[in-house]
Length: 215
Image (cartoon, rainbow, N blue to C red; front, side, top):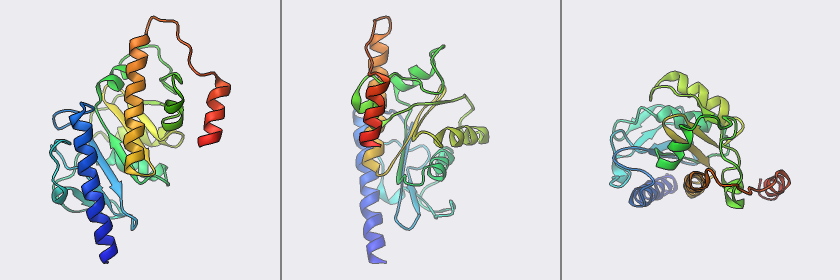
């Protein structure tokens, strides 16, 4: 029991640290975005509704049982189901980061991109940390149909971009989910900077090689 409490205390503090880091560097703003992480017993901690990621209180994080029932902490975000969908489909995931990051949202607004894989493999780290970025169609925040759209795409990718909304990214650890989300946002920024230019992304062979090396 003491070990579980120690793990939970550390994870609460880590969520607060990651949230403040993302907020301070303008990856999110206002009360947008949410973070969750799973404990080894299956319980889940999540940032609550109307909370700024820049000013989280570790004691007030929403806590869910392994069965997905809210058991303590502040009222959970209406986007809790986005996290639960990712965990259901990504069995190795221990954390999920969902942001309304500006450049990623901008990508979701551009007509004509491939909705199965929105961004080209511009850098090796994008391929290694994100790999593939499908887009879920627009549904209002909290709509149950959005849950199914995310679930479908999460079967083949640990990162999903919600149309007119923002990315949802799962990782084997909170830091891994954070870094993948940041890599996605920076690649979206690069892509927007280079629109109209002739670009030289990684070839399919180079991309396949990276996926083989790094899974």
